Image 1 (cartoon, helix red, strand yellow):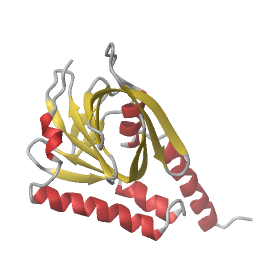
Image 2: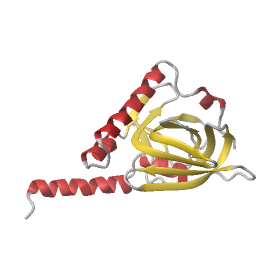
Image 3: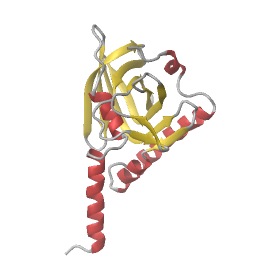
Image 4: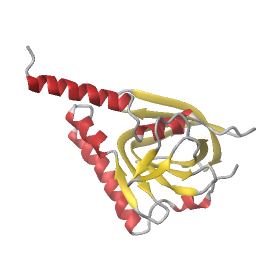
Length: 209
């Protein structure tokens, strides 16, 4: 017979699994990013493979704005989100918004420039990644739960810490991976304070219909 504590732990774990796979969270941003693309005739495409612990894999061929070898810039539209994403009480991403996506080969982050339906810049959405690899026209990334949103005025917020904590608590990641994710986020925040992030190339491209 299960004790009350055991039942509580089982319910909590079940809720965590639902949270990972079903709940409307910033995970939707990654899924929307890779599952929905803008239609642009005669454009190059990049095959994106976005992995998320424990075993979720999102694949898509996205339209390429610029292929600079070590940096890929693509454009896309957010669709399929169950609820809008709010940061610090402000709605920052919802269905119908657009993005420019910057993938940096060999780095532990990516950057999305987010635009609303009127093409107003809403801010930067940054994924903390275990890696970013490229082989030919294929990109592969492994998400490490933590994300950062930077408003146009420079205010930055760390989000999805609860997801990372639960991943550690339930053995989906080890302490080394947990600490690594925070170290990447901490480094990005330090560079933001010094005006060294995002990379300059992010400001060289704007959304174009």
